Image (tube, rainbow, N blue to C red):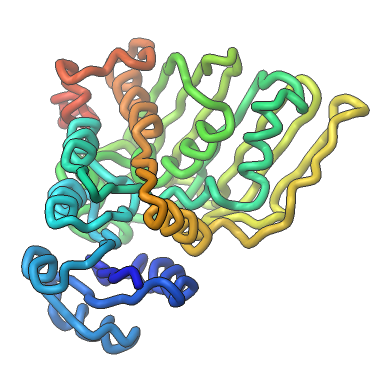
Length: 348
């Protein structure tokens, strides 16, 4: 059995991680829950039958020696906690965003040894996603030309009453970082490496430090051009991806997760077909099964660096007004250390 601990017992842990772990009960045992709020941790453990409760991560790691840790804590804690788990020999499956900067992400990767860390990017594993990626790679739908990637969500002022939200220090960024990252990750998984980004961002309505909306133009190495929108100001919420190829248009409309029925296919040539295998909706449950397969095989999981590079480039392009090319943000670049590039006052 893979001895597993959950760190952070807020909403995402109970809503997404517990069901995913229960679906793997044949090879996973939840041995501990950790939260700085002792009462919340105790209630969570009692509800889900978890035998041990801790308020300190290091103590849990020393006493329980888990094989795997699920990090469900606020983003500003991820890097230090992931490194602590890896150094203790535990694999890590971390909620997004895994880190607040490329520098933090690289620090996590550098701490890996026998144990490794992976990111929660469950949309890659929904029905149709891998099928579309493979069809594009094979060229059976023609050449990618145009894409749209829209995360149009709504978060009111009360959402930002939680102290760590909406700040550069603790959330790292706004909807570009914390909301649209899932759709952008799926777009990259389908289209492959990006080449150049031009962007704009602003704080239009919410009383926060970071942006509440961003837009971007992304050129891919294969020549395709995409438009990207990330918003928390959209009363009619939607997550939307559209891929226009020479021989077909493929669309995905959903909100926080999608099923087989959420794809739309429009052929552009007589030979273009769309017959993806049916499967369960995109979810933590589906991705965890793949993650555990990698764990058992000793395969290092994906930490999502290409996606974090795109997010970072979008912020740099928006805050400097200049195009950003993939690979230019190295350790000497101020945007490598923080998404605001040393200018946190920009949206105040």
